Length: 239
Image 1 (spheres, rainbow, N blue to C red):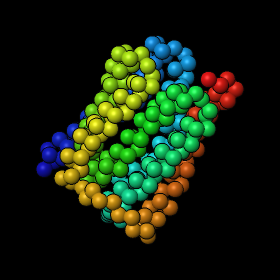
Image 2 (tube, helix red, strand yellow; image 1 turned 30 degrees about the vertical axis):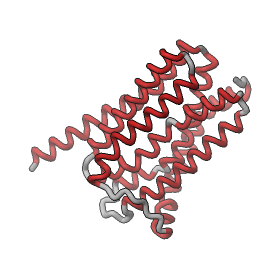
Image 3 (cartoon, rainbow, N blue to C red; image 1 turned 90 degrees about the vertical axis):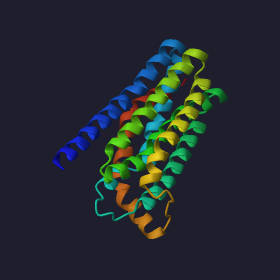
């Protein structure tokens, strides 16, 4: 029994570490390649779009994961967590779209900005499944799925950029392939382990959103402070 537990912990550690490393490195690598092959203007769009995506990812994730993963008494069911996530990712996308329209860039740049920022949707949406896998003691499933999905995002972006030399086309290809990878990697495990019908029962949903609101607000403000220098540069030296 002890050996089995140790083996599971080893898998959890391995895949969670691999997922964290590639998650941290992917956007840096993508930004470097954009700067190298497309120049400073495209790199500026990519960097600001990534900042916007990260900003609103805090809304999409709503900092529910820490609460969900430690909810060992199952105060809230997965269908409630799932319903809350559907609400927050919709609000996330509304925020990204509003920020894109507010930027006032040319149409092609605006679309590229929107798509690049929307790549963070996958991280926010997947997180509710990863939190439940973690709560069930299978963090390795979450780490493995995230590792391969981010790998698909990174490789497809690099290959498409080198092949097309166009940020908009590259972003669109990456978005489509990332969506396919997310579905292919999450659904098989989720179907066998989780009830996939969200529950929009008002009382538990409201309780969950209210209890996680302070965590979300702290994360949102922290991300804003982290991105504030970029916003200041953009406002004074517009692209």
